[in-house]
Image (tube, rainbow, N blue to C red; front, side, top):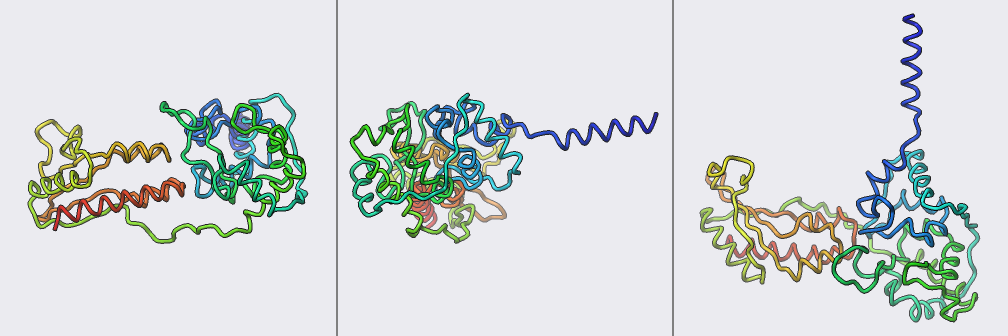
Amino acid sequence: MKNQILTLILVLAASVVNAAPDGAALFHQHCAVCHGDDGKGGVGVPLSLTSFINSVSDEYLRTTIRLGRPGRIMPAFPALSDAQVNALVEHMRGWSDAPTVTHNTEPVKGDAKRGEQLFAKYCEQCHGENGKGGTGTGVTFSRKRELPIIAPALNNSGFLAAATDTMIKDTLIYGREGTPMTSSLVTGLSETDIDDLVSYIRSFEAQPHDSAEDEVMPAVIVAESPYTVEETIENLKAAITDQNFTLIRTDYVEHGFVEEGKENKKQVVLHFCNFNFLFQALAIDPRVGVFLPCRVTVTEQDGKVQVATINPMLLSGLFNNDELKEACREMTGIYEAIIEDAVL
């Protein structure tokens, strides 16, 4: 009897270990926050769009999951197992009954130089100069946007590694129904023109790209104040106003964590915002809402007063969005100027 029970336990354990990954659960965990649980899009592009899911191969999806889109919002997922990646792809395939397409890997032969001219005329308006991608991100903002879907970056190393020439050519020929991307044949281009465009897009692989910044960024910007906590707070208020920001409120760091009235009066946080800057940053990447509006803290410990705030440049690296770097660089400069004015 004991042997039978042991055998049953081993069989059950083996079945758990060998159970296939749940693609729906994985999608909800890793993808839905940007692409929506139903794949209809959000911060990320819609994946369940028929004209997309029916036109891409499983290998394209697998490579995209593995490599992401460096410098854009889409992160890489190197830690997922092959079985998990396959489960994700299978889950996405469930959005359509159409047969899975395959694309051959033969290069398209065209005139890249002529394709550059065609790209500037027909593609650059949406996909950006040199294929750097459309401005901003997302499809579900409440405010009006220029395009329902932001055109992807075609000079992205992740895209170029995932997409074959045949896939790019088919996309140009048939367009993406449900998006601003129309058939290039309908717009008057010939198949020769399309070959030239594909060759130009493929030539992006040979172009130099900005390397990731290797500098290790500190998590916070910190400065010691020669003034009292109260004086430092007043100095910060004046500096915030000088930088054209609006002070929203001043509060104790412990507010809400301890009984009201028992907060540490030597730990204060100032909340402030420039709403124009806020909206511009959110249009680039809505995830910046995690650390906006702006905050700076003043604390006193062992007789020393310190002013500290998060370092936006560190956060821009975490968000994998080159366009966001400029906004974060500007924000870092503003933080440094406010703190410097307050403690000098």
